[in-house]
Length: 187
Image (cartoon, rainbow, N blue to C red; front, side):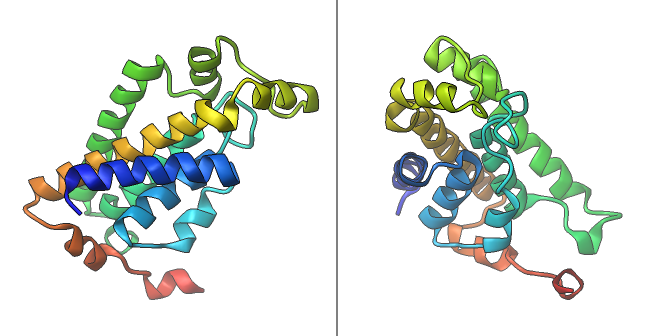
């Protein structure tokens, strides 16, 4: 697939995963991983509590934003084996996430879950209250609202990642060589 196709695929998968399974952070990660054909269940699992503003509390960062930041850092973040001197990858992750941040601010005015909700719904919701969740769902949360946020987060993460790959004169196939689990991390 070319760049535009990968970006479109990430959007499509992100939208569908949020619609079907909910969990905006995990839906974003799965969308980018699946569009690339590179899966890592450790990263997916680590995002379990990051949706809905972290722990569905609303006052933390948007789960789509969190998931996108995680997947970008997964490929080009600081490695544990080089904890003391992996400045290039640490700076790359921070630069990519700054780009992601700027996209969220431009589109939604915030990276905070409640701020994003206010932009797309005209108000925010207490996602720990049963009645509020009912109203949230009736307002299109998993029909066209949060699904579109996750679609955008997935597409933006893909575009930022592909730009990083191009800047390093690499290909998508080269990403598979960046995936590893350090022996010390397995127990």
